[in-house]
Length: 80
Image 1: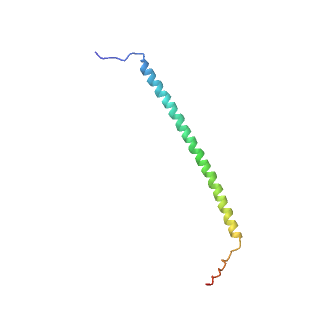
Image 2: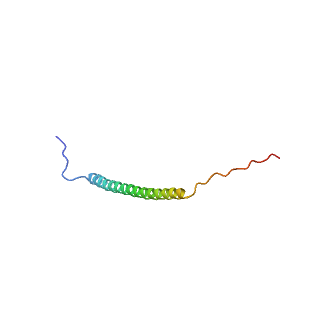
Image 3: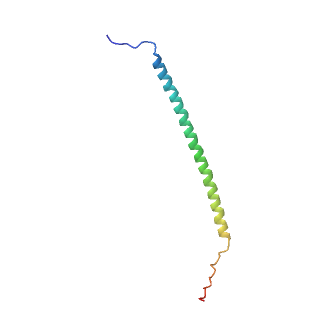
């Protein structure tokens, strides 16, 4: 005779399916959280890059507007 599964699930089977369902939902939430964090990091990196580029452009403009300074000559120390 072959053993047949009963029509009603066992308590262990119900508990296992509940654990699997909860793990699946938690995994989906974790993936969504990770993706949101990645998006936030990319936005912040873009903002910081724009700030750095603006600062570099301002520094370059300031350097271009300053007169070229000639190096000063140093006097040689005379031996005593």
